[in-house]
Image (tube, rainbow, N blue to C red):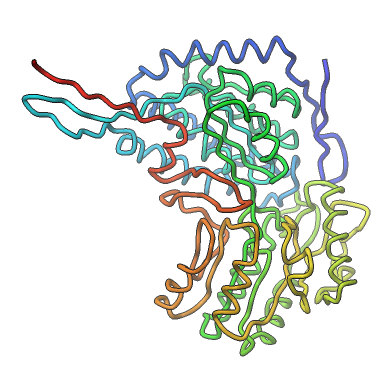
Length: 463
């Protein structure tokens, strides 16, 4: 049986080893999913809600342990990782649980002496959830909880960098008392997953990852007519107007650019600043960036950990080098960070100026602790540059004039637009993207649509 190792970016050691599922195990999982779904969908919604709520509580109660596991697997500082469970994971899960009854309720069109007309939300069947390593719990919960609440069974394949997440989900649902086969996971390679997607027993796919990965998902499902949800990341911009709340804007954008070592699909990767405040903004932004403590993420004092792998770090340094050779200037001396090591996964944060859109650093997703800052003369120039991208996940406008912020937001071609905040998913709002950022949507009441199909009833009471 083939296996794989999880190499911790902390020190390059093998953190754990797991076996890939074989053909028999995958077949068993698919059979169990189909068999379990028949009764799961008929279980009253209030009981499905109770079981999901219990599973969420199980994970939240173990946030410290799960957080340490996340740190070992992908390198985020331990001062932050438990907060993924107690913060956004819990917030999103509970919101979807609390809104399920309303979102999944039947829509009655008519109930008269002559007709009963209504639309119901029927589960699609079995949902394959393909989740990433960068936020292993709070990304996967977008699909897992609403899919189960809607009456589907779930088969999860988590990123091979964070396989423990899938195992902990299974433990939580087992402890909650969910029936066998309703939630399952497999550890599998790309070829195996392509085969699973092509299997007629899979009725929907929810994928979060790279554009390349999304393309592979579409190719695998090309001959099937099923829901494919793709959240593929972005090159998210920010525009800082001269009337912005200066200090808080700088602080929020530094955090939005460098939290999780910049490995966030909705992290800030390019900033456009009005010329009136450009120099002071760059000085303040760079000064705050220098305050990060790059080091071992198991040390509670560390605020910036390693990237997920040495290869990811190498790609980042290559992108920075290409930009500098093209005329960009780095504002940060990496050697001022004692843990910076070009041969390891530890990469110092970098702020680039003298950048433009001829450079990949301003057009291609970096997914790293680096950001480019450009001056702009007016709102129109900022909007043109923000929209000059094949991605469209989030964007943010920073201004003390909310009316102006809202009017500019309407001009930005993106799935979510913020004013005076960034790098956040509100579970009450639909999470979606345009262009290379993917298709479909999760979260909010609308988030159940990917895991249900409308079924219409037109019943004549008498003839």
